[in-house]
Figure 1: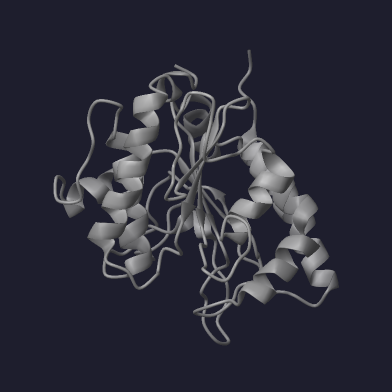
Figure 2: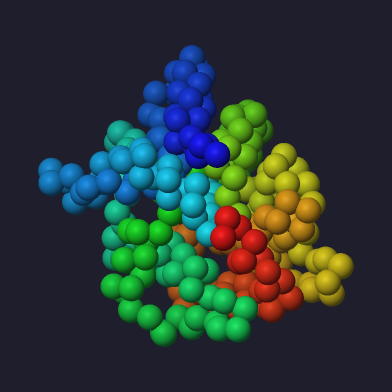
Length: 268
């Protein structure tokens, strides 16, 4: 069977989204999707070139597809948006440090082996981030600044729900990390997770018929579709990275103890 072309379909969705934004006077569009895995551009320390065939092949064959669902791009005042897929990251920023560390913890943790925050190095986290097939999607494509209010984010999610749903379902990730928990949001406390539950995977829940319940609300599982969602903080949240990491990975490890086949049932 010929591999499905996730990359080309994602580009089609982005182009449709960009045109709709431009019709509304929004012209600072931040592209996203499966992270680039081509060569690093010599003229920039922060961009990869795309290698569509390689990226598509890796995503088709990935034993576990991981998607980080985030709010919007922090481009700053009067700055142009950039392609999220070209970010190589910088551990001096909390956003990228938490992203890389949490990615490493999720990839390496198995049902019988839990990863601790201090059990690996920065270099190991960076290397996995650069090579493992992952994706990033911003719910709000118009670039923003250092923060976006829940009211504004909710407006964009509702306005663009059709395209956001189409992009998420097209990438067909196995683990979706919803980076936007807030004490002031109803239901799950996370607008991104609420959207995912309502529009994409209706059976996501933090309890199931195997007797597993996540009382802390980190893990939501859709058994029918074999999809896992993580109710995560914003990656720049002012929290202890170590405590945050260990709580998240503890919850994921507990889930795997009850569902050991989860990481064995995706394209292996």
